[in-house]
Image (tube, rainbow, N blue to C red):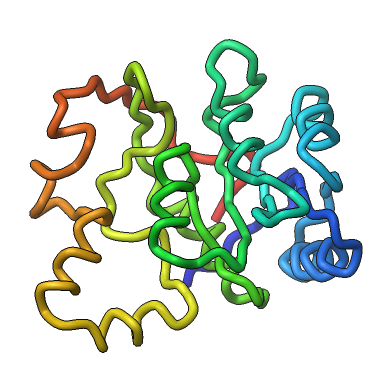
Length: 205
């Protein structure tokens, strides 16, 4: 992975558990990120998000913090101060249906718990290097969903390998690459694709 200067990046952490916020904050500081805001719930997060210039959101998705609700509000074109902001969901909900739900609400990256510095850095690098155009349709706004996956999930590759061939194909369909674009929701329904700046403010190589 490329070495990036992340000092100018401003990150919002949304996590109810204090020890998890400390872990994430310590990891970010190790990566050179010191402009960090913290929230314990969706309301606090939205207040900070609207008042501060946030370059990236790292949010929990659990019974304590509904990261999907927060994601939906952040992507609200009418009410959000920056609907294009990269949002990384950090969650133990790693079943494919949960990843698909997050994808369909406009998540940028999905990171499975437990977390380590290397994984967080890899997601930040992914945002920088593989930024996707945004889709704006009647029922969706977010990064183009026509990507095979949002990142490796803990245990999912082994589970996938143990499936029968027909089930593997079925499980893979939601994460569609360029060779299967005719199956993607955006392509299948002819929805309008809007190109936007994919770079993240404050990031430099």
